Length: 70
Image 1 (cartoon, rainbow, N blue to C red):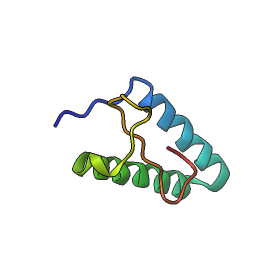
Image 2 (cartoon, rainbow, N blue to C red):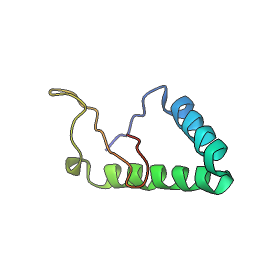
Image 3 (tube, rainbow, N blue to C red):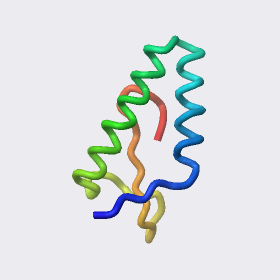
């Protein structure tokens, strides 16, 4: 299976990490990043567990368990 990340993923994740670091310190930013990586691994492992962004789309959306982010 080929995984394709949207071109804005790195920018978006960097902004989210910066936000969580400013709100709760480096540990919170690291926790966010680790959860994002773990969630991406779950999507890669079993993409059918996650819904499509839109009907007819190939992109999947996965929410993070501890953070209001998807």
